[in-house]
Length: 253
Image (cartoon, rainbow, N blue to C red; front, top):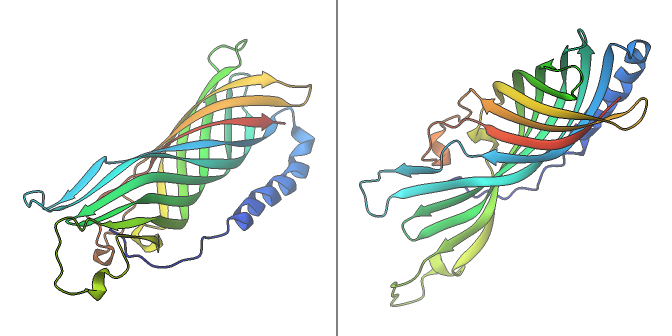
């Protein structure tokens, strides 16, 4: 269970500005070779898949600590540059901003925490694209990615089950009531970078002479244990990898 530290939510506007500036600067350079090079903007929903559904500490004890994780929704934005090797193959890279979230439920005896754990990452994917049938606008891409963590936060409600508790006199420890809101900065619980593999399926739709739309589905499979195993965070997990599914739409110039 992470320590409950008050924190003001981070502002991601400057990270989105980076993507915009890179896209603007690269656009002029690539304009001379648009037959072989394409610029693409993607956005959509991220579904985070928990690495473990349940983490328990000392399960032999009746009131042992346990944490349950379940999937939740986030979003992603990205800018990609693609280079066409031939009519069937291409390679693309760029910047991806991915905001992931999953639901978390902690229980230690009478204490419960219910909330969401969110991460913000900037990643650099390198995707090798293959189009099996030239006449069909369907393609598959795969390749590695390198990610950098920029924010990690846990936010929710702490609850104390007071059923059966009898106090002879008021106890100042429980003066705050049955529940209270909390927000914790847990950035130090995670390593600063991550890496893994991505696989993507996309379907291309022609919108105009110079603009195509793309419906895409990408699965990111993390290969690195991203926990720092800092005992100060009181976490019962000792291994965690990032898995998420991105579903979205893109515009290809």
